[in-house]
Image (tube, rainbow, N blue to C red; front, side):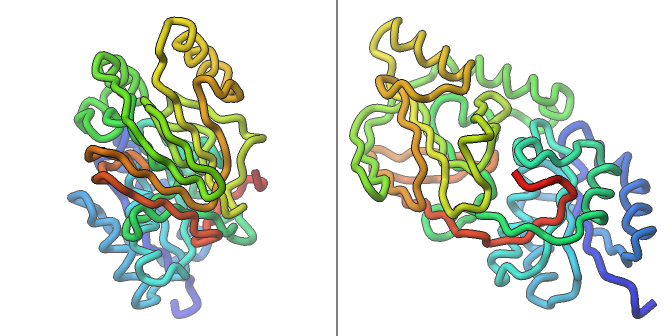
Amino acid sequence: MSGLKKLLLIINPMAGKLTAQSALFQITRVFCDAGYLVTTRITSCRGEATEFAFSASVKNEYDIIVCCGGDGTLNETIDGIIKAGGKTVVGYIPAGSTNDFASSLGISTYPAEAAKEIVECKEPRALDIGLFGGERSFTYVASFGAFTATSYSVPQNVKNALGHFAYVLGGIKDAAAIRPYSMKINTGGEVLEGKYIFGAVSNSTSIGGMIRLDQSELSFDDGKFEVLLIKQPENAVMLSKILYGLAAADFSDREVFEFFKTEKIHFVTDEDISWSLDGEYADGGKEVEIKNISKAFLLMHGKEKV
C-alpha cells in the first residue's frame, strides 16, 4: 500500500451535463488500475475547489491533483495550487458546457478517455497562466464587453440542460446591450486609445465557444498572451468587417480589430468594468493590469504539444 502514488480527485457535480457524476466509477477505475490511491473531494459551492487544492498542495500530500468539471473548476483548482507555491502536478477531466481550455489542448471530453490521457502521459507540460490585478489567476482567458456576461450570468441549470447552446442564447440576449468602453491600453510597447466593445487576453483557441483563434497564432508556454480587441463599429461596413473577421478567425483588419501578443497589459477606463476570468465573474474596477506568468503550472495530458 505504501508504494501507491496518491491522487486527489476534485469533482464539481454540477458542471455541464452532470457527466462527472455518472462517470465517477470509470474515472476512478482508470486511476486505480494505473496504481494510484485515489481520494475524492466533491465541491458544494464556488471556491471550494481552490480550498481543496490549496490545502493539499501546502501539505504536499499528493503526487497529482485531478479536477473534473468545467473551465471554472479548473480555474479554481489551479488558483489554489498557485497560491500554495505551484508545484503540484495537475490533471484535467473536462465536464463543462464549453470546455474551451480542453478544446485548445485537444483533451478528450469523454471522462474515461481524459483520465487515460492523464495516466498515459510520460511527462507533465509547463503552461502559462495569467495574473489579474495582482491577485487572481486565470488559466486561459480574461475578457470584457460583448457576450462576456453570458459566461457567468446564465443559470447553471440552463447550462446543464442546453450546454453550449445556452451560451449562444445568452449571447443573443446580450446583443441588445452591447456598448463601447472608452479605454487607454498600455500593451508594453504601444499605447492604444479608443472605444472597444470586446476584449480578450487569452491563451486559448476558443473563447466562450463563440470566438475562435487560429491555432498557428498562439502558444501555451511562450510567456505571452494573445490579445484581441474589437473596436466600436461606427457604420454597417465596419460591422460587416467584424462579423467576417470573427467567422473567419481573421483579425488582420486594424480598422475594426487589434490583435497582438504581449507579456503584460494595462487597462484604464473612466468607469468600472466587469470581467470574466475563465467564465467566472471578476470586478476590474477602472484600472487593471494583467501579467503572464510563464510556465507556472504543470499539466498531465496525453496529446502532442501544440
